[in-house]
Image (cartoon, rainbow, N blue to C red; front, top):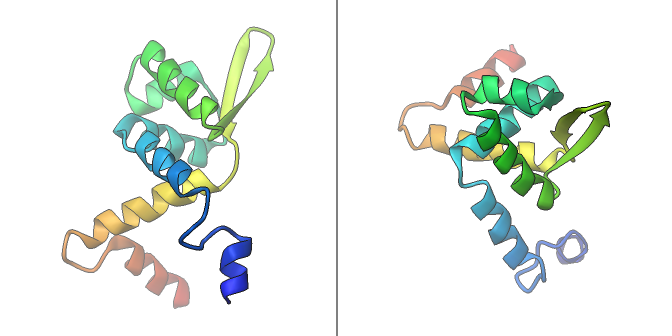
Length: 122
């Protein structure tokens, strides 16, 4: 078990701990979380479409996407003059999901995601 933790980087002395903290800091922004949720739901979107979905200006969304791109959380595909953004992998999406699930726990009642688990079992 300890060997598994070391192989996947989950030991206490891991070199990526500081980078993980930077990722959490980068995701500590509601607009970026909404961008990740939108990309998770829709797959690939342009800046203008993302701006509509998160109710922000295209310029603001573009700045957020630039930061997410530098952190390799999103990647791009260009088609003529349009640039489309997508999640680079599933990990940022999972981090956001887990953070939202944890937020649901802070409300005190049974979290919504637990209701979904029960419905799947039925």
